[in-house]
Length: 162
Length: 460
Image 1 (tube, helix red, strand yellow):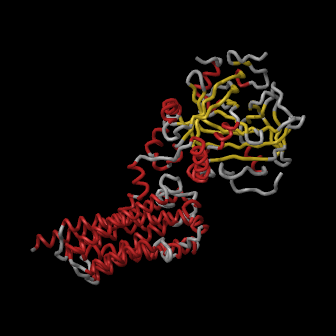
Image 2 (cartoon, helix red, strand yellow):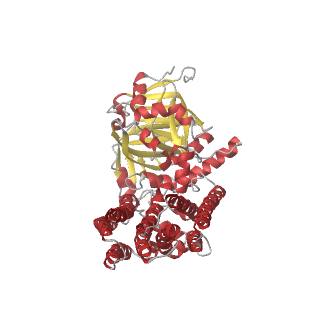
C-alpha cells in the first residue's frame, strides 16, 4: 500500500482540484488544475485528448508534482501538500481505458459526470481520455497550510535522501 | 509589460501571451497563488503563498515561504478557482498562470501569461477550440502505437449525430400536410403515404450529410468554435468520427434509397409530374451546398430550403396521392416552406463569423442584426398571412385558422433574437422555440385538416 502521510491522504481523498505541474518543452513549469484521484497507493489524474498538451509534456519528461493548496476545494481542510513523483500516461485505448481505471473514483468526487456520460454524443472528444498515473516519491506537508513554516518531508521507502 | 489588452483570456488552443494589466488585476482576485519551478533534482515543485499585485508596475510580490524560491530560473505563479457543488461536482472554473524570474526581493515581473475563465470562454467553446489538438494527439498516438486510434461513438449515437436525425421533423410537417390536403380532396392510400414519408426522410438525411461534406471541405465547420445542437453541422468529420469518404458513401446510399422509393412511387402512380418534382427536389438539395451553385454560400439557402421543404415536399406528397396539382396544397406549402427557411435563417446567426471566414455568405453574414431581426418578423408574419389569406380566399378550410394561435411563439422568437443575438449558447433556447414554431403551426394545420375530413365524413 501507499506511504503518504495520513493527513495528505485525507487531502487527496477530498480534493476536487489539485495543481499538477509538468515540465514544458523549454524546461518551463506548466501547471494544470485537475481533479486528483487516489487508490491508496498511486495518484490518478486524467485528461481529454482535447487538452492533451500536458500528456505530450509528461511523455517527454515524466517528472511531475501535484500541489494541494485550496481549502475551498478540499472541504475546508486548510492543510497543504506538494507531492513529487514520476508519471505514466495510460493511453492504449482513450475511448475505454479511463472508464475501467478511474470512472468509479471520479464519480465519487464528481457525481455529475454520469449525467455528462449519458449525453456523450454531445461532446464525444471530451470522453476520449488518457489516464496519468503518478507514483509518489517525495511529499512535503504543511499543517494548517502554513507554508511560512518548514514542511514535514517524507520520501517513498527506498528513495530517502542520502 | 505589453500595452495590448485582449478582451478575453486565451484558451488552450491559443498561444500564451504577454501579460497585460488586466491579467494582473485578475490575479489579484485569487486568495493565494501556487508558485512552481523545476528543483535541483529536476522535478517540478510547488508551494502556495500569499501575494500582492502592483498592476500599475506590472509586478507580483510573494509573501515569505519557509522554502526558498529560486531566483536563478524561471518560475510560475498560478491563481486557480472552483466553486464546489456538493453532490454534483464543481463549477466557476478559472485559472491564470504567469511566468517570469523572481528578484531577490521576491518580486516577479511576469513575461508570459495563460489562462481560462469559463464565464468568458464557455466550456463547449473551449473544447471546440481544442479539437485540432485532439486530432494531432491521436494522429501521433496512432503513429507511436502502429495502429489507427480514432475517437468513437456507439453505432446508434453515431448514426443519430451523422445524419442529424432529429431534424426530420422538418420533413414530416410538409409531407404529412400534403397527404392531409390530398385526403381532404378525397385521395388517400396509406401505404403510398407511408412510402412518401420514408422516401422524403431519406432525401432529407442525404442532404444533411451532403451539406456536412461540403461544409467540412470548405472549412466552415472547422472554423466554427461555437456550434450548438441546432447549428454548426454534425461535426462528425471535424471530430474524425467519420471520414469524408465514409460520409460520401452514406450520402450516396441515402440518395439512392430516396431515389429508389421515388421511382417506385412514380411506377406505382404512373405520374411523370411526380418524377419531375422528385428531380427538382434532388437538384435543389444538392445545389444547396455542392458546387457549382452552392446556394447557401450565396445567401440563397433560405430560398432553396423554402422551395425544398415547401412546394417540392408538400406538392410531391400531394401528387403521390392525387396525381394532379392544385392551388390549395401549393398555398398550404408556403407555410412550412417559410417557417423551415426561418429555422435555417435563425440557425445561421451563431455561425455567421465562421461562415464568413469560409466564404459562406449567408444572410446573417451579409446583413446586420437589425435587418436580420426585421427579416425574421416579415417572414413569420408572411407565414401567418398565408393561412389567413388562404382561408379568406376559400382555398383552405376555416379550421386551419387555429394555426394563428402560434403567433405569440413567433413574437417570442423575435424578442429572443433581440436579447440573445450575440450569444450562441443563450440563443440555443430561441433556436429551439423557432423549431417548435414550425412543429406547432404544422401540427395545428394537420389537426385542422383531420377535423375537416372527419367533419365532412360525418356530415355526408
